[in-house]
Structure formats: C-alpha cells, structure tokens
Length: 208
Image (cartoon, rainbow, N blue to C red; front, side):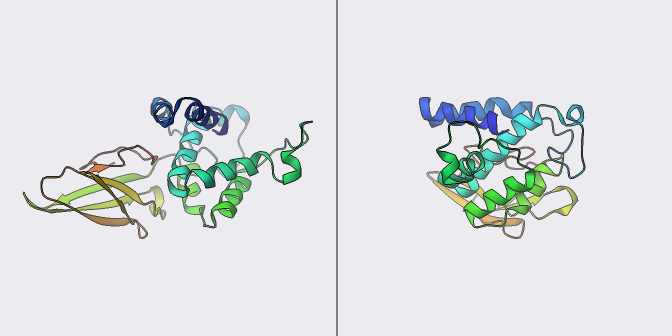
C-alpha cells in the first residue's frame, strides 16, 4: 500500500493534483474487500497476498490525507522510512527495517495527536468497507440531509463527510457516527465530490 501510494504522490509532484486523483480513481475498482488487509491472526504470505494490500492500503493513506492533511501524512510517511533524524541522513541502507501494523498506527497517532484506532480498525481489521447511508427529507424548498455510517460489527467511525452545496462545501461532523446538513432550495448536494473517503458506495440515497 505504501509503495502504491508513493506512485500517486510522485504523479502529484510531477504532474499536478488532478493526476493524483486520476490515479487514485483508477485503482479504486481493484479493491476486492475479500478479507481483512491486516487481520490480528497470523497468515502465510500466500494467504495474505492479493490486490488489497496494494490498492486498499493506498486508499487508506489517501483517506488519512483527507482527515489529517497533506503535511501530517507526509511527515508520518517520512517517519516510517526514517524513524530518527540520524536515519534520514543514512546512505548505507541501515535505516531499512520491518514494521508492524501497530507501528503504523502509532506513528500516525503521534504525528496527528489523535487516537486513530477507530479508522484502522474499520479499514484494516475488517474485510467489508464502511457504508454511508443517506436520507433526504423535504419537498421543493430547503431540505435536511441525514448521513449515517454503517460499519461492520457496529464499530465507531466518526469520519467527517464533505458535502458540496452549490459553490460551497460543508463538512458534516460525524462524531457520533451520524450528522445532518441543510440543503438549500434548488441545490443538488454532492457527497465527497473529490472522492477522498474509502467507503462502500457513493451518492445521495445510497444504502451501502
């Protein structure tokens, strides 16, 4: 997943943010969700191998960038590669080492100052992706759009959701797993218009 995501960042740095998003969109259909990407029990290399360790892993990092910001994610990636300042100047390869899923969670938590256990639990420990349930109430005037995360096992998933409302974007607080946004009359809401959040399906009225 890290290697695949590096390709996306390289495309952004050399060809721009649109190319970055094009790459991420191109690999999204290759996520199979057949088994957890990083289960807690041990698996053989043959058992764990598959496209999700590349493409789902890259999309988890993509979603982390949305949640934490570009600077924080790049700093976390740097710490994964070079755990100390001394290691950053190493040219003999001695900084290369094995890391665990727990190490990744710790680094991102330390850099962001947030407890991100809920995100990694939902994305890496479960096969099925979180689904966003959407309900819109009201007639021709202003409407209320309710969003609710549905996660395997009822796990917490307070991922905020961006909703484009005409010429502005509202970020819906989902601290308790659900949230509501008011949709002005004549406006068609677009959920996560830039496709940052890894989820089952997309769009108003979606039930998965």
